[in-house]
Image (cartoon, rainbow, N blue to C red; front, side):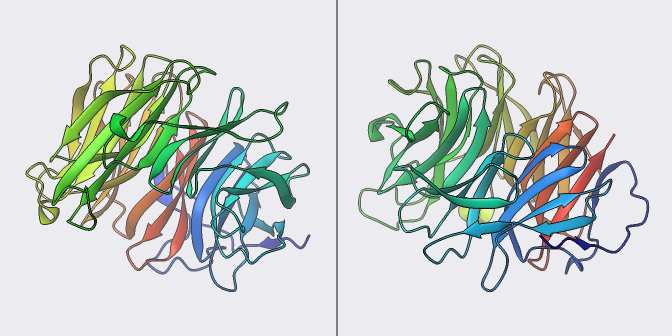
Length: 357
């Protein structure tokens, strides 16, 4: 496998910084990035693609300056890998959008060669996670939403759909798996009269919970007309933080990024922070870096701002504005002091951000 060394970076300051500064992200290894999974301070795996582009890379070294393309062996044309989850430097999964069947997965046992795993999930494009029990996938297929989970001892993914009535008109978005039995997922959308049986206009958002490994589901949070939720992260079976987004242009009277928190397993939720209340905002990912430290990757018309809490989401501070960043897609922390994120610049280029305490 041919490794390429990127140009040496200037010494990066503390906080979040763009590793490939500039709105066109010169030197960035992938035209499109959809997932990042870091397994150590010097090893991160990135999946994505684009027409004529490699689908995945391993970045290694002190500043991730060594780039090694990964080999994805597919019998059908795969243009984009939409998620990646690495358990360690040699074992992991990637999920492909056009892998012949919905929810097609490629696995690796050496950290470089990904081959058709034989695993499929009934849910389609979505989010892929490593868990204490194996891997999990959150997504939707043919207007059904749910979880797909897999353990090493299983022959394939086990898919659990929640009944549509539990979260009407709300497709699956993100998930968190604090234990083998307790799982959470966000579901929601912004509708604008685009199909029969759907709301004429407005936001709908839910948090779904199962306490029995997907046998039964309940909606423990819902909101209509205000915003919908994207990322969710749980430090335990009872403590979770989620974030949603809305803009006035889309008809919300509650624009901005809304951060909500539960400390009792979803029985009660409190909105603990709003970012961009006058400008609107966007958010995809929420991540705990420790049991008490949590991050939200928010953006508005001025750029990206990382929201940071050191008391498990009760209070928040805003970081410096990264004016050349338009979206923060996913974060991956190797410790509370070091993390990475994939992002899209204001010109639509893919880049990587780095956090140091």
